[in-house]
Image (cartoon, rainbow, N blue to C red; front, side, top):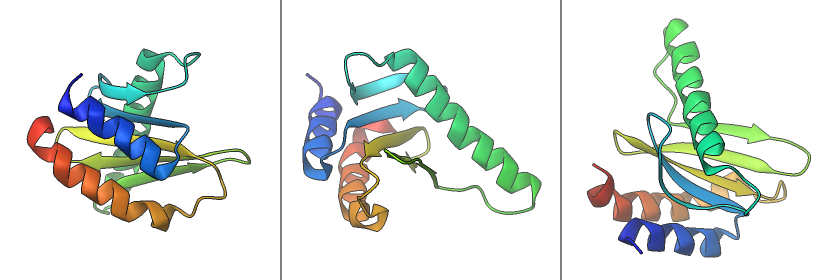
Length: 118
């Protein structure tokens, strides 16, 4: 198991996330802890596309590109946040979780994983 995979597992445990993945900008999985019934390939490609679409929309309006995209539904919150220049981390948590409470864990993860991702 790679260091990033170990860190993904630890992030999932700390945040009590249903799913955690590190995805590169082109949608490839770097490491993931996803439910068995989830297609890693489809999940990762769509998360990369969502962050990319947010970046395009923001820059078309003359704003800086977002560093994070949140998807909120009745039964889950999906956090897609860039980490470094070439990757993003995706967390799927219960809607009761306050996203700002995840910030410290995501920051620690990003700092620890940066050397393995750039």
